[in-house]
Image (cartoon, rainbow, N blue to C red; front, side):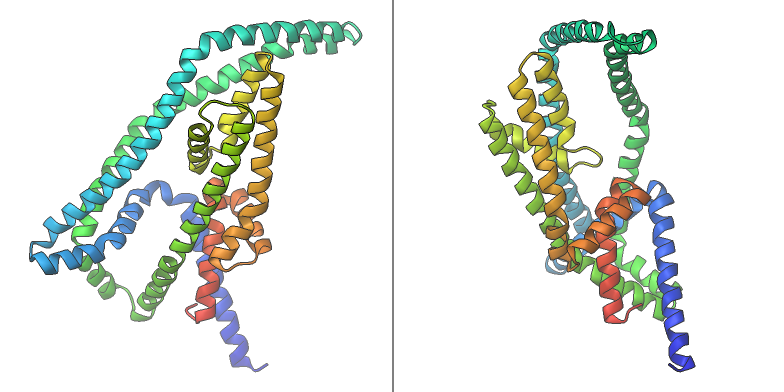
Length: 345
């Protein structure tokens, strides 16, 4: 191997390491600061084609056409979010209406649990018996504290979320209206070679978004089908509607099917509905196992990566970046693989 070949490979390896380091820093620190503008850029990228065509056909000012198209796109997103929030609110309202009955059943269940632990505690040393006797109360306090902390945290972050949403909407209008001006400015201030690489990354990213969305759509339909069949077999009324709601929750960051199924199962067990509680826990286990087994294969097939490599990326991304790393790491790896194959990096 000659010196020039070795040097070229070292330069490529250094470039890849620099890109990976930049991605790590970006995912770790920048989303909280740049998220509104990243979303605005994505929206502008998605609508600039229709805006250009409508501007050419109607000969209206680009800003007016851009405002109309962006408003339509945001309206669609708003309707989808409203539907999801409406479903969650309806479920929460139904839960609140049933809360008195659940609390009464929970108190009976805790009393029975205390009786059982007391009987067991008579055969144990005093320290262990005391800890066992206090276990139900400790569990109740822990669950109450966790729920209170979650709600308090949501309320505390509400002003920040509203500010972020407002800045995002304004940025969408500005970036879309000045899309071509911003592109020309970037072309002027960035070196041609770097700009060409950025364009190559853009092309590859856009080509991968559709397959990735299709993969997660397949997973969503699979989860919905499993939930619908499982809830129907358990004799739950409105199984299809509840399955759709739980599947929608499964798509949201951090949340999953366990957010609904585990508390539901716990309430059923406390109410003495052993079959229902065990069935819900079994359904959660089945959905989770199938998802973990199928997801690397489905996503890998869509973005052209081996299932094992997708699994490695998902695990590594989750450990480094949390939920967003779990979703984005296979996508970033697929983009990087495509860029290397094309010789763009």
